[in-house]
Image (cartoon, rainbow, N blue to C red; front, side):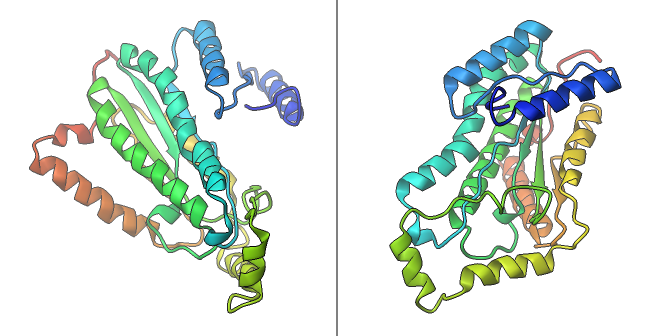
Length: 269
């Protein structure tokens, strides 16, 4: 968790109360996934305290909203850093431990936008999440023979219960935004927000994503699904990913590497 002594201090306190009330061992550790130094220190602290690391959940994410043209290149780079490069910082420190263990689980929180229907004005975010999903798929194949499992959680749009939309970043080039608002895309931003609110069921609960992660972790080795979809708006991603994943699997069969579709069991249960 980032900024445990600052804006997230109340969350750290809540974690402490939860652990005490439920008799569980649960601690918040300071980690900024945009800092390799912070990642190194956090993972070293966790490993020293526990002697092993079993599960990693890649869930860091940031959204932006606005015409793609109005975002400066640096804004896209920063978004890519949070959504994609952060996973590589963590993996490069975590995976040596998991490979020595011959066991582990990576859970990636992707987005239905990488294979489902998408609206405009979210292009930088969608591009970053698609890149993360592609990285997750590649890692799954490269880690299978080490006995390390992969599950990709695929949430759809949630307009409440998360600060994604409320905390979305804006384009830096306001002049370009004004041109879009003053031209044929006048009122487009408001229309997209209204459309999202209309297609997402009012009872859509973002906590179902967290529950999906818990369920995956609790599954025994070899029975964890490769993808889990939680998509209240039903944007078609489940069909899109089914096709993509099948094509990728067929290629592995063609080149004689189909064993990479399942993790090798290299430990005694």
